[in-house]
Length: 536
Image (cartoon, rainbow, N blue to C red; front, side, top):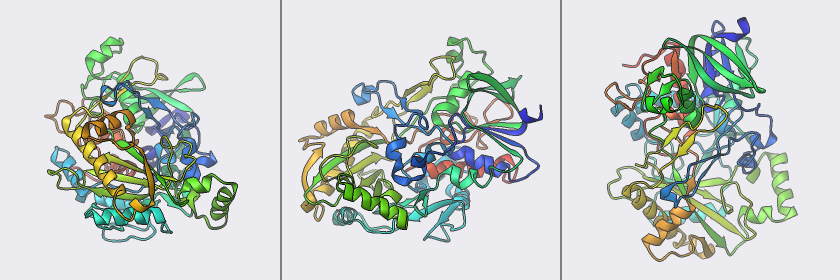
């Protein structure tokens, strides 16, 4: 029985789960079991930064979810890739090191979540961070998760920067400063030419510990309760149901889609939904699966009059050979960087005190993220609204744990979101029409010269796509919030021995990419679980 009983059982070997597996097993007196539905992270495409063009579509390491048809997107279903391997989405994402804004976390605190303000979370961001260039007081160079600078300037990004400067956006060499506004090069979660996923940073150094058991290809199906205490997890491995037990806690880190799904399948969630599927109600929590938020991106594509894009390198054997040699000999070049090099944060709405939109500037173009590059010289400006008002949901549609839940994003549901999106696309087009970028452009491929804001909104509805940041579906909040699923220590309300530690716990989506916030959340959660920090 000893191999089925642990102190802590962590469900989900993604960004948050890898951190927890490491930190909870640092003390040899604690036994930890990590359950991951996908395989080990052995695919070479995971570790090569540009490889996410492959993993974006690979069902072996990607859940390949689809949303419900969305009225705000002219009833389109949106493809939602999510990592299904050790490292989770940090093994297949775009690698970008962004924390979000100081104001995001102060906002969490002010919503009734003590201990989650900027001053509280900064030490945990720094605990994670191993930066190649930036140091105190806002950064660290000693943490396990590496943040690396892009070593060479690119002519396209330089033109993008100068055009943005001409429109009043200042240069920045650190998007994770106290002021996020600016244009510059992203730092990436890479190290010496390889991806630095949460599995590489946290799990690899810990995996040989005798008190850590890692189960791969094992999909959690439900939490097991005795009365209202979580005591274990049922999972499916090679078609066989198995069980592990937790002496201390069960921790769900399965992500914003599957953590609420597992809770609902376990009898924790909206009572009317559970009763619809004849699931015995352990705890009626109407917020489980609600409050879904995501960043919706609009990809503007331009054809260039000079062969300076990654498209050109990929279109010839010589270009591909040079890219390969750059990486093999120097761990440099496009293969070591990924796709998005340039970034920009700014404000387009009059009432915004901090940046409300983000750009990802890619030196290549394709019909969709991770798609085959165009035959012409091209680049992509992707722009998204940082703090959408629209809210969707995740709800089971079956008692079968292997069947994905319904994901309804509810994009562009509010007038403010529609107005911000149109303003964001207008600003992107303005950058393209500003020198020196303008002189490099032959034509606008997308959105293909719309004449009005109404046409731009229609472009957004017909072409908008996720930028892979679903959050909020098990949000933390105060006692007087009936939709709060977790308290500020990330404990599930109304039951014992159960926490949720992943992006679903976030009450609002951070202003930027969500991978580093997911790591920070787990770093702080580990201290909460081990009693090293007490929320005031």
